[in-house]
Image 1 (cartoon, helix red, strand yellow):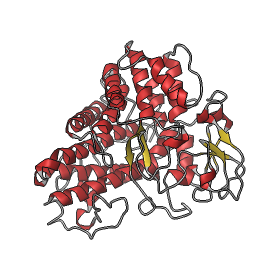
Image 2 (cartoon, rainbow, N blue to C red):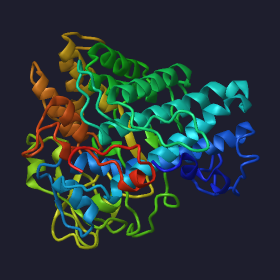
Image 3 (cartoon, rainbow, N blue to C red):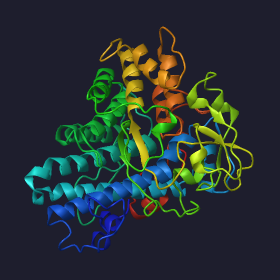
Image 4 (spheres, one colour):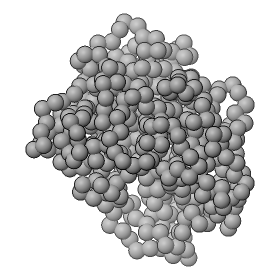
Length: 466
């Protein structure tokens, strides 16, 4: 890994105010003498961490989790090599997207470490929230770095394979070795659990207590701690702070959080590397959308996707009446015939319609699915019977639920509900599901440690297959 000090360039960061960091009216740069000597500037620095980490997810990691798990649901119509590497499961050590994501995540981690180091300058009334946010972001990063750049976590095993470097205290110069999978998971869990204890329940713009619990529910599913997973999801559901949107489509494409959003990364057209046509954006809408507003019409949706749904399921409904004169606002279904540049008569997904809308990260529907799955695995009914949770999801989709549901049904329901939201590869791995002809623990489904990092830090080992 590069020298840690190189990752931040704190003296020249453009930092943003609490209110405006996503309206992106930039404040002037803050030099190293004053950067972290006041609570206000600690807040500004932490805002920057949200931006870096969001970019890692929205421009590289979400794509990786969906395209590397793809089994024919997407037909890539574009020309970029990066999506083709993911789809073909043929990454190389110098692949650009895994390298960019690594840099974004470690830049965010560096800032979080600096915030935690200087937390005592924050007013007592705000200290728990700020510290909780820094721990939440760091724990989230390490959890997903381990899921992408390390062999699959196996409950009950030693999990002593190399994962990623654990950098918890920024020093002038570091050339760390990779910690083990178990060590990284332990750190992520510790950070997220402490964050859940510190964060406010009522914060809606940044991370709150229930965002930490929701991410913990993902982690506990991965580690096979079923009771903990069910309880974490149940805490979110029973908080009564969240509710399902009226329709599947209504859960997406919002400039502000909705009642279904447990946590989103805020963004707008000034900070999402895009322009009005979306052509400069590596984010979600640039690839998924095909409208008059944005999108390159790259990710065309195939019949393989539609075959996942029963007749009448709103989550698989395809709108076919749009024309080249249509407007983005005319889209009424989760899938639609494209009308943007180079649409080629194909169909597209409406979960990511515009680059200036928030990056949906974790929503209430996932908590119902997690509680149902964990309860089935645990032979329990924490909060509700699994069939009740699945009924809540399917009722909104206007489709009936069987009288009983088993684990296979719930897993497939998770795919139907959450597809193209950055979860699939991780779910397939923890279920032991193959991806095409690759076993779930194939080295081809693990990102490489970026060669650029290894050129600087020779202590970094490389993953198998690279």
